[in-house]
Length: 456
Image (cartoon, rainbow, N blue to C red; front, side, top):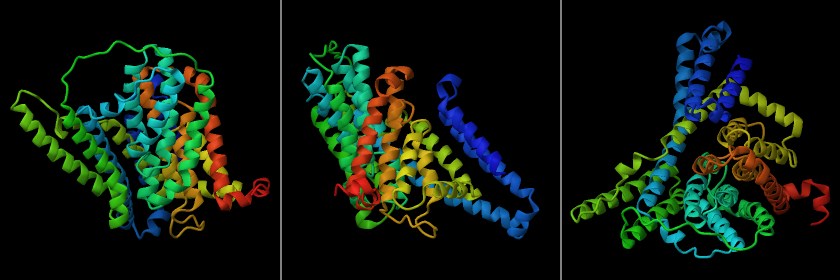
């Protein structure tokens, strides 16, 4: 059974990774994978007398499977509804042109200065929103700032690096960090303090390298004045309310200890009511402004369903014991003490550039549960903190390795090989530099490596 499940999982991953050549949306592959592994797992067990005896017959086994599905679906739903709320809020801000308040402030045409402005803005905006949405917003900005396509590709590539680095240190900035935060592996303040410097270095190193090669000014495209303009006071209102709702989520979660998706949906509800009132008022004056209802029509639902499918597939591997076996193999190869788990995280980060980082982090969470585990990776253990950094930034090595990269690739039609030649080595340099900084700042890892300990 294990071999069959792993084979199906690998084939499913291949379909997801080869989305463009196969011309089959990765969401369809992920959903099919999630259903298929559970169906195969169930079929093998029903036809296994030993399993039936273990659960006291067919009825006992069905009860176990039903409870497992409900439990794992509940954990997955927390992430799915959190993302749905966050993406709707951000899309509503975009529909009200709220982000133009930020982007209109960028007036420089100097190539090097613009690179720093765009990278720093992306880094911190990604921490407040999420890396995929930030990448979309910043690419929209670049289209207004840079006319030459290939020149814009370079800046778009740096946006991917900065967005992934910025999302890694914030509990709401990257899906994988959200997963670790919701799962209780990390806490809000601790993950920010422990990873922000490493993430910043991961962004700064590539910017320094690219900046040294840039000279002159960019050529801006002609301004496009088409479309209905949203009044400035409404842009500000929706921007501040939306971003305020996102920022309040980790604060309220820390105070109340309630699941964060509740506060995300609550923030969406408040903004929803506000835009309904605004839209009704301005419709009487001849304006047609969007509401959350119209916004939901173009929220990226396929991405949300992708996470649902892939997380349910991983949950089957957890229930079937496959992840436990994988954990044993990694533990045997690298050990569970520093620097062993450092290499495990580093490998997960590199793998996340080939396959999606969401299932990799989900697998790690399944392999090393916080409670009742042989390995003591409790909340805020360096393993989880470094995993947040590696999984969040490692996907930058390839353009298909992160949600931000896939989004930018779709918007700008960036060639895979071009990214591999121009951006991958820059991403690797930043990834390694940030990892070394994390090691240097963490006492456990620092003291475990003799030559670094001697520098202390």
